[in-house]
Structure formats: C-alpha cells, structure tokens
Image (cartoon, rainbow, N blue to C red):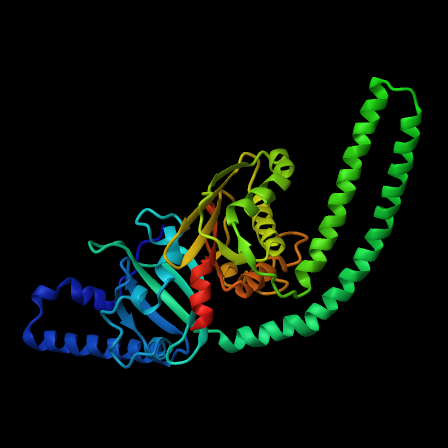
Length: 389
C-alpha cells in the first residue's frame, strides 16, 4: 500500500504547538476559508447530504437536505433522522447494527411535509470508527418526477412492446407444450392397456413427472405474462408465512439440486396484511430465485420475519457474491441486469407490486458477503388508518 500523502495543511497542523499568534491566526483564517469553500460546494448540490451517527443524530446537513426534509437553515443539526422520517430506522434493520457486514444501504421512502414526494436514500459509512461509534454519509435524492415519468414510460411504451414480444413467445411455447400434453396422454392410455409390471409402473411414473413439468412450464409462462402486465392487486386478508411456505415448497427441488440450505424464521401469528396472494408469490419467487442464482452450491438463504406497530418485515439474506456499489442504485431500473441472460425486469416488477400494496423493498449488499432484501408490508389495521387519513 503506497504511503499516505500529507498536504501542507497537514504538516502545519502537525506542529500546531510551535505556532506563534500570527501564524495561528493565519491558520484559523485558512481553515475558515476552506470550510467555507466546502460548504459552498455542498450547498450547490441538488441532492441532500447528511452526516449522521449510528443513533441517527444529524451532525451536518446541506441546504438541499433542509429543503427535502422541510426544515429551515441550521434546524437539522442535532435532530434525530429516525424521528423526522418515521419507519426509516425499522426498515434499515441490521444495516445499523454495530457489527453489521452490510454497510451500503439504499432505500426509498415517502415524505409528506412540506408536500408529498418520494425520496431515494443512499447511505454508506465513512471514516474511521471513533468513540461515538460509526458515522454515515447519507445522500437524499428527490425522485418524485423521475418515478412518475419512469412508471408512465414503463407502463405505456416499454410494457406494450414487452407484451407483444411475450405474447408471441407464449404462443410459440404454448403449441409444443399442448402437443407434449396430448402425446403424454396417448402414451398413458396405451400403457394402461398393457399387462402390469414393474417396468410399466416405472414408465408411468416418468410420464407423470413429465406431465407435472409441462404443467409447471405452462405456469411459468402464465406467471411471466401476469408479471409484466399491470394488474391491480386483489387485496385480501393474507398470512405472509403461509404464502412464503407455498413458494419454498414449489422451489424445493431447485433448492435441493443447487445444494442451497434455507433457514426460515417466520411465525404463524404474524399480523395479517392486505395482499394479492398470487402477486405475493411472484415477489417471493423472484427474490428467492435471485438469491439462489447469486450463490454457489452449499450456500445459505436465511429468511426472517419481524414486526412493529405499523409494519411487517420479511428479510431474505443470502451468502452470495453481493452487489457492486455502482449497481446498487440501478437495481430497479428496467433492463438493468448483472446476470448473463437476465432481462432486468424481475426487481422492477417486485418494486411495482410492493408499491401497489402500500409497501417498500430495500436492499443492502456488500461484495463477497451477500445481499439482504427486506420487504416491508403495512399491517392490515395500519393500512386502514392510512386510507382513512
């Protein structure tokens, strides 16, 4: 590692005790000028910049951060970010643990004051840990217009083109699947006319497996079309643990083939949420599939549920390769993918469904350690209060 370079200012500070009054005054003036320069630079940024402690206390805020959060000049310093943005602390989960290994965090949340808007948060620790604990740099971006225009573009031009392509692919795949189904039925009928034997039974079992796989492929096509075609959710009282168990059971064979160990810590008494059961399956299927593809054989997927007064959280933590920092902020963009052969639509679809359910998706990741995807659902009673208000 190359030796650390020291500026002339560093050298002066290194012999601070030997400075006379004149040089000390000059040094203070120089420091004030440099501080003013950096203040001017940060205040010209459109993005909000915060420096916070592990407890959420704001140590620094630029002008854009004051505008975004809706407080006047110098009113943010000393405030606690978790109080200004209710629910943010809970959604960050293990990312704020002293021993957390997932330092890079991205979140999307809603602010209602001074006007409703959507803010993207990007948070990363910086500097050496001091006596007060870890410190974080927080970048806040107002993505309200971007989100609206992106959603309109996706739901109109791009989604239309995808639908046309998907319809053609589904048609082309549907014909051979129908043919396979018919021929498997014919073989089954012929087998029933033959004399029973162990060989016949073995062939019949293979045919049943083939029929099941054909049915599964047909279901994948149907799910793909439903995923990219915007459908309003059919909200019903739903137990998240039950839906998750169904999805894991469906993916059990793939998980076993890849030697992936799943540790699910969920509770049967999780608070009820209002959700579309089929759309929830799409969400869970996408997230588990992404986690599996990110891991080598022998990997581990941990799923943990928790709750507070307002929300129910499901966290999916894999032991995979992790995500590069430059890719983390682009995960929900359509057609952005880091996988060979990926289409870049999976997380976009998950985010859209979560928004329509009144929830959010958050991702923390670090290269070489893995990724944690956290789904945040409003509890049924909380959702009713939100709608009434």
